[in-house]
Structure formats: structure tokens, C-alpha cells
Length: 367
Image 1 (cartoon, helix red, strand yellow):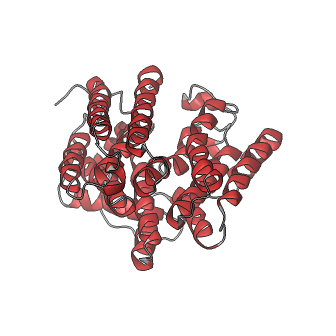
Image 2 (cartoon, helix red, strand yellow; image 1 turned 60 degrees about the vertical axis):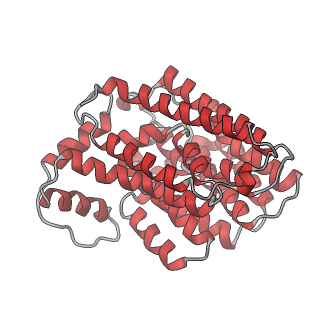
């Protein structure tokens, strides 16, 4: 078994190599059209990469100090009480019953982690295959290169699994497969109830928030309200019963969680603004009309706006991930599915390298 301290550096290295290879391919395009024309067979390259990644994550050392939440999940799994839970609309019974089912089948903790990792990774690939069918390999590398992908693959695993199922739900919803979208949304919710936020955001974006300007106004308004009355909003959310963890996460005593920095997180806010700036340029400045991208953009704006309101919270990154899991989709969709620039392949290569490079630098410095 690989030493736990090597997991993140190896993951970042492999992701960086994939990004460089894909960027090189984009730069060598003779007509700068690879992202538009697509490569229909590269799904069969992406699939084994995703499968091997999930397998590798599943067989990580479960009690290593580098994987704090994995330690807790492993301990809970090995001490789980047998017997399936009844359906409870207020509980996260699906994850509980998945845990029990794995124990009933006699799976080791590695087997359990592998199943969770398979759902986490393969659901995002499935979503990218729907959203960007012209180049799902490039789409999934954007997913791997997102800032919190590795963290939620080995620590906040239940949140990560539920959020990627929500991404798949959104993909089904955009192609008007409402039955599949509803089933996957229910699965995500009963794994982690916090996904009610992005699910509600996409429903609002699909049928209510019809213009991208409205999404931007919601996001900008949230910044203003957070600066003026952020603590009041935190207290409201903490007492709303939205999630059992809300009250403890919004506690002013962040030190009990070991979170390194609280307060108004301008660094997180600037990072969150990048997809919004791209959407502003594509949808508003250029005036390009694309319904799927409009829905993705507004969903991200609305979900991120809720995080902005509680930006001072301990474990603010966990609230942020309720919108950040959409980050790669909002970035990659216009790069592959829309004609934004004449030299789009080269622009895409530059964005990919900057995107993955930023993640590597931030994870190296702060995680």
C-alpha cells in the first residue's frame, strides 16, 4: 500500500501531466478547432483513467493522518450496527443503508471506499459525457483539476459523492430527462441533505431565472449583504434546520475545528468569481445565446451566493463546495461547446494550464 503522504503529490503530478498533454494537443491543432469538432473516441480513454483513479482512491490507507475524515468513516464503518434503516425524509438514510449493505456483503473498508470513489468519479464522467460530448476527456481533466476534487475524494467523501451526483442530475435535467434527474437528485439528497441548495438553484435557473444578468445580480447582492450583515445571515442559516452540521459549522469558535482562517474570505471569493467573469464575457458582453450554459451559469451564481452569505463560517470550504463542484462544468462548457474565440483551442489550452497550475500551487502551499 502506498504511503499516505504520497497520494496528493502523485495525484497532482498525474493531473498536471494530463493537462500538459491535452494542452499540447490543442496547441498543435492546425485549424484551432479541436474543442469544437471534438474527439468522439476519447471517452474510452477517459473511462479507464477514471476507473483506475477510483480504485486507487478506494485503497488509500484508511487510518492515515493525512485523510482525517477517512479515519472517521473507516472507524464508523467497522463498527456499524447491522440492520437497514427505514426511509426517513429528514435523514440521510441512503448513505447509511449503503454502509450497512457493504458490511452485510462482507466488504472491507477498502471495498466500501472504492464503491464511494466509483460513484464520486464515474458520476462526474457521466455528467461530462452529457454536457460536453465532443470532448469528455478534456471535461473530466477539468474536474480532476478543480481545487477541491482530491480533498472531497478522500476526506469529505459523502459530500463529494452527493455533489457529483447532483452534477449528473443537472446534466439529465438539461437534456430534459426529468425522471432520471429526479431519481439522481433524490439519491444525492439522501446521501447529503446539503445538496438541496444546488438542486433548488438549478430548478430556479431552469424555470425562473431566465437571464444571466439576474444570476449576476443575485451573486453581487449576496456580497453586499454579507459585508453588511454577514453574522446575521449565519445565525439565520444555523437555526434553519437546513443541515444538522450547520449550527456547528457556523460557530464563531472556529478553532474547535482546526480551520486555519475565518472571516470574510476574499481569497475564496476571488477564486469563485472566475466562472462568473467568464460567463459575463460569453453571455453578456458577447451576447451569445446558449440555454444549457445559461442554466449552468445561473445555478452556479445562485448556489455560490448562498455560500457568500455565510462566508465567515468555520469549514467555509464545505459550504463553498456546494457551488464549486459546478466550477469545472461552468468553465469547460463554453470552451468545448461554443465558438467564443477564433483561436479557441489555444485559449482553451492556456485556460486549462492556468486552471490546473493554480490548483497544484494552492494544494502544495496550503493543504
